[in-house]
Image (tube, rainbow, N blue to C red; front, side, top):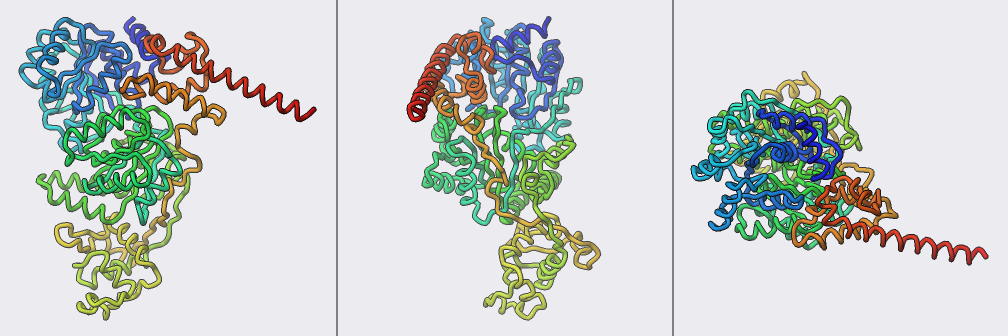
Length: 618
């Protein structure tokens, strides 16, 4: 009976025919009052796993969300479905908070969003003591992990929910958690008896590509021009200065780009985030300060202009693309300086030695993924103990397999050069020695007399820098990040120097989009004859959005299904994926009228064309 109630809610409110297999099991468990831990990829339907049970069970569902800046959009999305949703946070006036509390006490709120800091206040807990609660949903639960990239100290206090409200089920949800993080979530949130649902981490609609581009910005622009003209996306950079410079540069290239980082004032950050959520085709250039909890479904690409510090960070950030299930791209360019900068940041942090060792291991895993010559998706999933039986055919290495070469001799030259110059110089200097550059500095150290001087003149400086980066990535060389970036030989390198082992490395190719053979543009999902209708539907959606994000009216996936079906009645429109009862009543007539009008003019155009053809034939 409960499952029927849940299914009815899914069909009438959300407009979907059936639950995905994992969703149904999770929802049934929460409805039955059980604690649950959910690991599900972004775009996999996590929100439904707590929203539906909150509507089935008596009382208000309390949703712990880490960013108050996004609560408004999350609540707007629920109100667009005619649900009673609200939030309480520090951005509200005392009067607005009091009004929301009154609605909560009266039992008129289906879902209430609060930040962990607000939830743990004694005033909030005392308020909840007086309410009928259906469940607690702890979103972005990986924030409880002290080893994670999004650690939030206040999440550690959420174990009080188990002690204070033992009869209220809790559902903890995340898209990013390796085994260590999962164990921490269970321990720190007292979820020892929770049922665990671990979905595949695979996001098959995302195409992964990692490039060693000489000019990262120019390569990115070629990638955007080819695959994402007019699409919304996110570009991640390591530093605030690079964010500002890249955003300004993209604007000069004719793109609508805005910067986002912690150095900007709160009003500017809010304005830029609002544009991204509400306007089509906005590119946000950001540090990792941007993105957690972003609900925008039609982000078509995520670009990294620097190497992320871990596979968890890379997976979560790339996961912000293609939440609607439509094709999307994750494109990255990185270089040796990224490795040096990240290692320097880790060494200079205030973390203890154990934490630094963990961070170092995570960076090494990320480097391994970047330098991989086989299927990237298989390696990415394997990191999370998820198996993909065969190559994905949707990453750069699958679509355009890189060739490898026997780099043993070249590596011996590079390693010998580092050793014979005293292991106290950086890569650029070593490259100059290898190619035999006539430089005063080299002569002053007497390295022009060394046996390694000029032995690498058969390769370009760029090739040698790439080789050094690969040797560092493989752990054969270490970088003194605390000094001047000098490189030294590790124990792992000695078998290669002695000729006891050979070394195969990938040939580096400048990427123009991961070797993709077709565009990854949402308009490409629409047949050429229907492009006009697609654009009209998007325009109508924007005009009906009343200044809110257009996807709150209908998502791109819903519009694409609408183009395919071309519904001419309410009954036909109700079959379109994502069209629930409330949205059908509110928007159905306007979209049906537009489709009929478009269809009528298309028929007239066909008649005119046929008349002209008949006339010419006669």
